[in-house]
Length: 75
Image: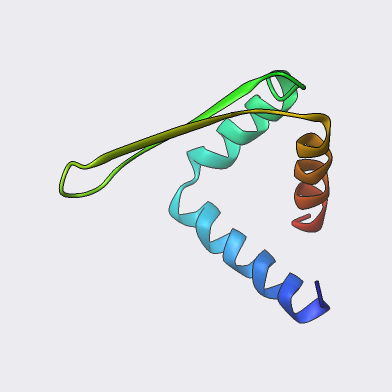
């Protein structure tokens, strides 16, 4: 990732945090206590029309490494 893309990503994260101030608090709580190898992350999305989509994944060690790299790139 080049420096310009990283700066844009950081800027977008700032806008996202301002739009959804409770979400980073949730992510911090999860990452401090629940993100471990074998944890299951489930994502559920409901469209404005009411359509629901759900998926889940069991975290692997490589997933946790990626998450840590991503978090450190946003600091």
